[in-house]
Amino acid sequence: MPEPKPGDLIEIFRPLYRHWAIYVGDGYVIHLAPPSEIAGAGAASIMSALTDKAIVKKELLCDVAGRDKYQVNNKHDKEYTPLPLNKIIQQAERLVGQEVLYRLTSENCEHFVNELRYGVPRSDQVRDAIKAVGFAGVGLAALGLVGVMLSRNKKQKQ
Image 1 (cartoon, rainbow, N blue to C red):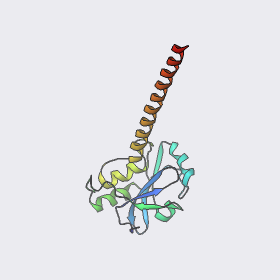
Image 2: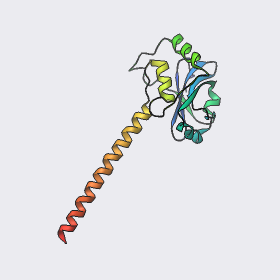
Image 3: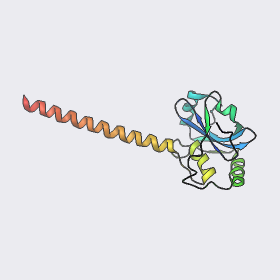
Image 4: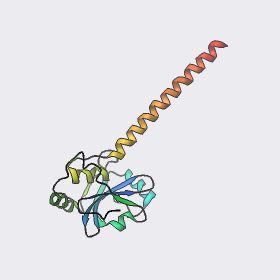
């Protein structure tokens, strides 16, 4: 795994979701976390996502990741040009300690770090979850339609 560089996005693999932070140097990351988020809390921390407030925190990457694996993931560098490094770091540092609005679908930790790095608040986790729910809904509707057709067909034969 490459050593993180300031401005890198860090993807932390929690058991049920991905947590995101931005590396600011000297082992520290800045991330958006609900007030009840405990570093390294893993699966339990997903329950804290039900709040509407978050705190911008600066903590050691090893403490935030805990036992969870993590990686540098600047996955949108081909699509968006990263902002100047000094701007990314200054903006992130300026926000530390602030309480901000938190919405799982529109203002979560992934939106936060992407906005810092690229100026674009974006969450692929949310987009992928919405797609999955949409596909599941279409699948269930199709199964329901097949069920209705089979039921009618059975009634007609009787």
